[in-house]
Image (cartoon, rainbow, N blue to C red; front, side):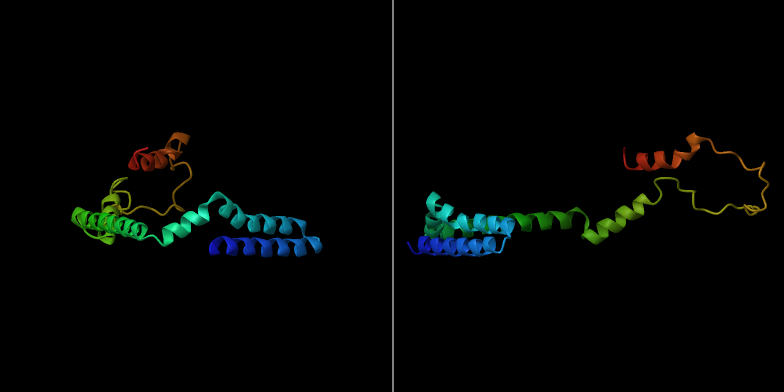
Length: 149
C-alpha cells in the first residue's frame, strides 16, 4: 500500500512539473516529462509494484537469487580454469598468435638482398618493370588468404 502511494505521489509531482514546463512553452520537453511521470502509475495499475514488493520481502525469493548467484560464480570459475589450462594467460596467447602470424604472408619479404643494388633514383625508367593491375592486388590477395577469406 505504501509503495502504491509513493508511486502516485511521484506521478502527480511529475505531471505538475510537466504543466510548468508547458506553461514556459517547451511543449516537447513537457510531453516527455509527462510520459515519464505516467510510468509509476502504470506500474501500480499492472501489479508490477505489488509483485516487486512481494519479491523484495520474500525469503524464498532471496534464496533463489542466492542460488542464481552461486551458479553464476561456479560457471565463471570453471571458465577461468579452462582458459588457464588451454594455454596460459591472455597476454601469452596474444603474443603466441602474433609470433605465429608474422611469417604467414611472405617470410622473405623483409629480408635484405645479398647483392648491392642501385638506389631507385639511379635506375633508368626503362629498366623498371611495369606493374600490371593484377600485380597490384597480389598483396591484398595474400592478406585475404591469411585470414581465410
